[in-house]
Length: 177
Image (tube, rainbow, N blue to C red; front, side, top):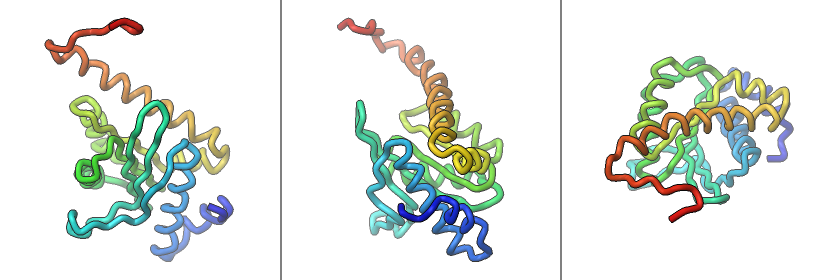
């Protein structure tokens, strides 16, 4: 956490995959703190999941408790298989949010499946791409927080129809019982 942000971004361009991978994970830890989450595990491996690795696990405790699974991808493009794997890990670790951070971009299919994930169950995916990281590099949290808010608004809009899809759900007015 004490490493200068400029040094972390410099290491992201290293030809050494170990250095740039650790740099992205370090950056992800910084991002988590910036948005008010607490990292609780780093490079988590478990016997119950045959040694599958989770880059980071974070938790939030504000108006409610929420657990985040974080996967870092220092690649030009992230495909839907990365999202699928992390959704599976989120189920195993009982997380509510899958966060994928990449220095590159997400394929269109990843965005389609992230939307479907939000529309069809309680999980949600948060996708941070190279453009969002560049904005964070320039503006710090002021560049990051609005990105998270836009994603949260999209997720809300995708999830809202879930309330209407269940004919047994009774609408409770705000402030009423």
